[in-house]
Image (tube, rainbow, N blue to C red; front, side, top):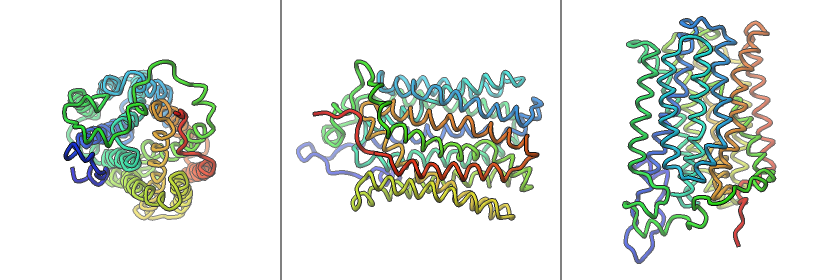
Length: 435
């Protein structure tokens, strides 16, 4: 709980009702834990990829399609996942989502050829798609506005660190069991989480037996967070330039970041000559330091906002993140020592994740009651790029005789475009203005 108290500082409780309960800490802890599980399930295939390729006889381009099909399905189901959370509440929706993707995590261990692998990874991606929009909806329901950047920072710290340690975890597990059994074990963990979450969580914190009146007084008014009834204002959502720009900057962010969870272990073995265990350790650095970047960003934005306002604070931090990631990748390509090079690429991951709290908190403020839909829209656009990234890298390597530096130059250029997007984003004005 100490970490959660750092992420979610205590605000003053209502005077007449005694000390406020802290049930929202448990809710945030559940969100952080599923983020870890989600990233373990997502990232484990990158470490197992050489074994999968060998057992199924797959080429680099075929393995690239296996990476990419997840991203396409993930992108396709982002908006439906967020819309369902807005309409029916994240309790039922997120439970079903986690059970679905956990089944197809286990099913990855049952594939027998390329088509079965592609279908399984696509269905896995369709399941994971709704996770972060649902969590964003949970935070909108359960957290005051002043705690949202920090909650998102904590969420992405958990996600990144879960992904950072996954390569080493998978490498260690593969010393004892096959890659097929490993996927089955990971699938079971998600089902256990879904049971615990459904038992605890409520869509309306005001109905939770562990929440008292003082804690309710700290939460946003129900008029701003209530489950949506009636039609979704799609014309309003898609007429806002800031929503398109949030999606565009997330395209730039995801393109570079997807390399870390797909091709990086293969790159380290083929180009840097690392062992399996050393490659697993080094490939976790961008995600490990990315988690640190989330914390720095989440801590800095509220303090900077007191001086220059929340919109400009988010903009400044995001631009620094994109520019820093681009510069770090260019420096990385000029370093020969694998350990030193990976430290620099880790710094690129740190700067990458400067952007995360700013982007996702913007979805909460701009979206309001429709935060699930808005965040799903942003994440959909980003993960289209996430689907293209491993596929583009696979084809570039095939066409250029494994010219890895070219792939990094492309990523650095794309990161630079993300900084430009943030110069024009209004990250605070809600789409639904209430009188």
